[in-house]
Structures are given as C-alpha cells and as structure tokens.
Amino acid sequence: MYDSLDDDWVWDGVPVEHLWVFDKLILAKKCGHLAAPVGIDVPHSGWYIIRPCVHVMGFGLGAQRVWIEKKTDEYPLGHFWCEWFTGRHLSVDYSYGKQTLCVEGVKPTDNADLTRWTAWRKTSDEMRLPEILSSFTDYPHVNCEFIDGKLIEVHLRHNPDFRWGQQEYIPVWEGESINPPDGYSFVDDSEVHGRIGAFIK
Image 1 (cartoon, rainbow, N blue to C red):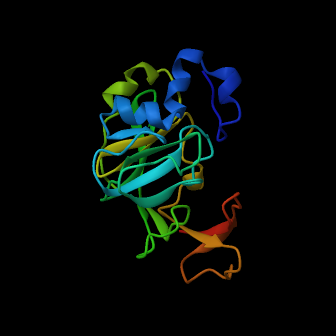
Image 2 (image 1 turned 90 degrees about the vertical axis):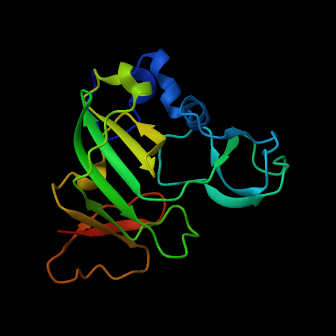
Image 3 (image 1 turned 180 degrees about the vertical axis):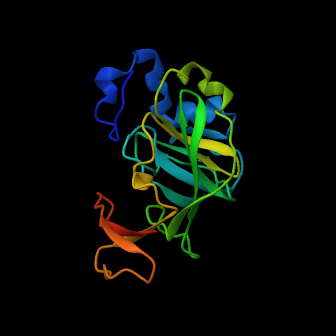
C-alpha cells in the first residue's frame, strides 16, 4: 500500500472502491447519522453542521454550525447537513487495523470557529476501528475523527500533528507570539487555515 503524511496521493493511489470514505455525507449515512444534502429539509428544527461533502484537507474548512428550522436551500451546493454532535473529539490513528495513537481536541469555549483548536493532547482511550472500515485493514495509515464516539471523518494518512512523538500540540495562529511557554518548544507547522506553528512538549 502507501505511506504518506499527505492526501494528494489518494486519488491516483487508492482503489476506486475505497474513495467513498472521503465523501462525508456517504460516511455519515453509513454510520446511521441524521444527514442529507442541502436542498433536503431537516426533519425538525435544531442545530446542525453544514459541511462540504468532499474535500481532503480537513481542519473543519467550509464547516459551520447553524440553526435550521426546515429548509436548507440557501446553503452552498456540494454541502450537506448533519445532526450536531457534542462531547469529546478524538482523533485516532490506525495501522493495519490496530490503533497506534489517540489524541483529544480542546476547543475554544465559544466554539464559533470550527477550524481553530486550543490544544490536542494524547490520551489512553482505546477505540476499535469502526466496522464499516473493516476493508481498510491493509492500509498502513488510517485516521478517524470521532465526536462522542461517533465517526465523522476518515483520512488515509496518519495524524501529522504528532509526528514529533510529543504528548501535546498547541496551535499558534497568525498574529500570535511564537515564544513558547516554559517546558514547550515551537515548531513551524503552517497550514491553510491560519495556523503558523505549534508549541509542543
């Protein structure tokens, strides 16, 4: 198989029958989540997440938390709505079906910007590879994102933020100081959503 930090290789390297994992709407439906493309009414008013059906970059790009009464026609084409989950957000790496890493994301208290995190920390949680991914145990790297134990996203790579083997990763955003707190070091780790690096230890 393939070994990469990046998703760019996926479209040429992964068997076509496995590409469905990058369609977050199909993934949501396979998981039994309440979800549908924009243009389909929600079954009841409430908070939902609106996201692009397909993109490989992650980071919560294009996602927003919205209150929907019924109609969803006003939202961008190529997006879908899904029930809003609350609870712990875990990012779990697997290699050939076995867990190799679990980290928990800490969000700002207002939770308004879905692309920005306060910190990621290693945990001792054990999460079995979801049954719907049983055909992916030949891959050296699979990364799964869970909220309250519910699978919301899959990448066929490992978590690049923990490639230094550290215990904690605190993102540093554009305009913030890069002088690390005591016990931490700064690493240059810029990304498209405004992160310029991180403090790690």
